[in-house]
Length: 476
Image 1 (spheres, helix red, strand yellow):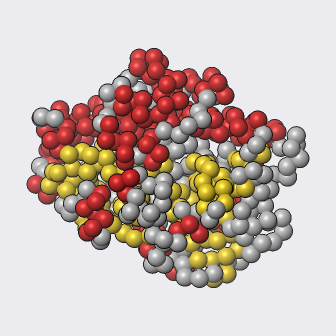
Image 2 (cartoon, rainbow, N blue to C red):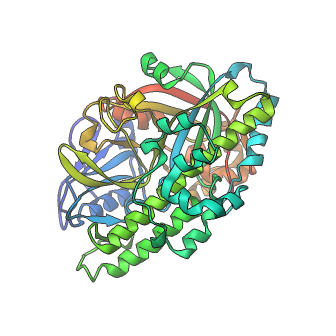
Image 3 (cartoon, rainbow, N blue to C red):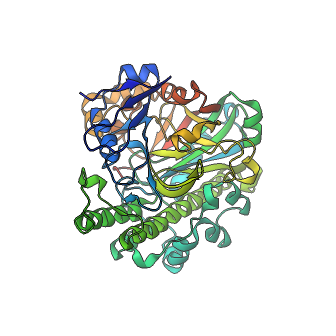
């Protein structure tokens, strides 16, 4: 059994041992620690801590659960000049992320029939499910290289979205350094999945702002109690999956060339400065820009659905972008005067007040951080607080699973799922097909969010409650 020793409030340490070159810190509330059963995830963190060039400590988030290589809810920082980059430590769905739209529509006055019409209108425009292709195929084929190389700003130039959207996207929806020439033809062939939400835990959710915790921040973010909200959760789809698959295999083959002792195939790595490392980062950037474009295009389709159902212009209903945050990335960042490559897998960048990388309008406050729960539980808008740099300016990205998909299908009945989803419209599949995404398969979102708020690393701004959810079939 792996020993975790208390290392402060809501924090537990795994000391260096064996081949580990760094310690591990896992952040859990008291309630989460009492029920913690993630031994394999801890081993994956320890494996990451044994890689060459790793910076002490490796971090486990409160939503941690087992993944491929690095666990989901894992953060690993590498020496920028001498460290390694690992495709498995970024993940299959590169730049999976969440964006939030605000509205001026009072949720309590929204007729259920209108809500269902909105859901249907969105579904007509945004394909969902594993392998589903875009309704904008001709534009994707025409502009694919520019979409990968130039990201969301190029899509806005084409007329999909508002120029103001870019001020509310991490990195303005564009990362430099993308190169389609280092992306395989298999990945390119999966590019027609742009402007779709996929399956698994991806979704479009109509909800409402149920509670405000920080009135000043909420006003700045454009969040008002009782108003309808829209959450969009999707990433780089099959394109990013193929990039990760290709480079994980290449990194595994290259390990002997660089005389690397890798702890697992999932943590196959190469030196950041190697040609293989540079190629992966360029391909990963393509997938990141793909994902930014994906969420931007879906946003445009959602706005058009509102206009189609409610009439007028989409701006009549606000539908402004609050923020778009990315998960599953590796990026160079300077923390404490030290440049490092931070791998976040199932973790969200959370910049504190005053950080220069915050968008200008959120510079003083820190940007909104979006923490989605399950389709039957609350989601949160939070913001980082000073001191978050000790966990590499990162927080958790969701609730985190407590049951695998297989276990959820085995242990949760359709009747139990229906009970938990009472009052929430679920669209897209039969209830039986949703069992692996049932709220019971996830950790308590309140306990997960409280882990960092209780120790002052983050602050709650607002809680969102779901009204209607669109999910696709299959598991991305």
